[in-house]
Image 1 (cartoon, one colour):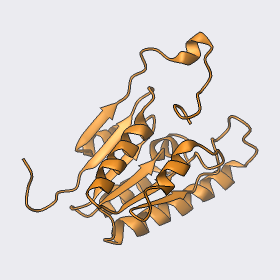
Image 2 (cartoon, one colour):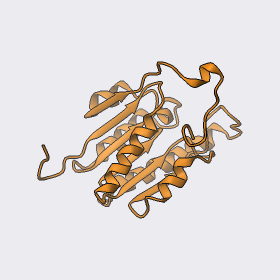
Image 3 (cartoon, helix red, strand yellow):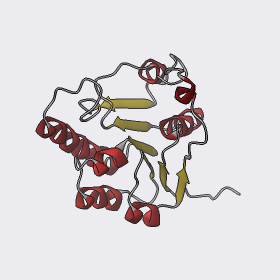
Image 4 (spheres, one colour):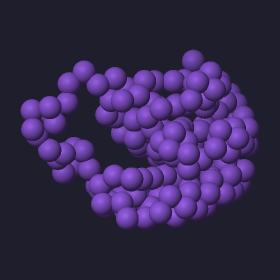
Length: 180
């Protein structure tokens, strides 16, 4: 049943399985269908080029994408200092607060923010500030492994992706168009 006045939700996609960003992007596509304005800020993933970047461009002007991460921290060719990663996360937090408070969007997605928190790039207090800034009519989606207990308790919807089986276990590498 649909209400007359919109109620925003705090939604968390977490867990060790695949599909957290994909679930958020599915919401993004659905929201574009209703002509919503969406802001997507990606933490951590910054240096890689992947299909969702090209796909989201096709959803402009409704979707605004900001890739602020400096890449995966401490793995896969990371040659940046922790301070550089932390600075990128701080810039992302400032941008997120600006977008959340702007009144321009119906949906804001903070992709991999949970990972930024678990890596220490974002403090628990900074996460709490982001969540507290959300107006009641805005839906806020936070993705990434390792969501804090505090965030899961605060959220209206929490989905935990659980890996049952993965192609990598059979030696199958990530696939273009499916994984990236």
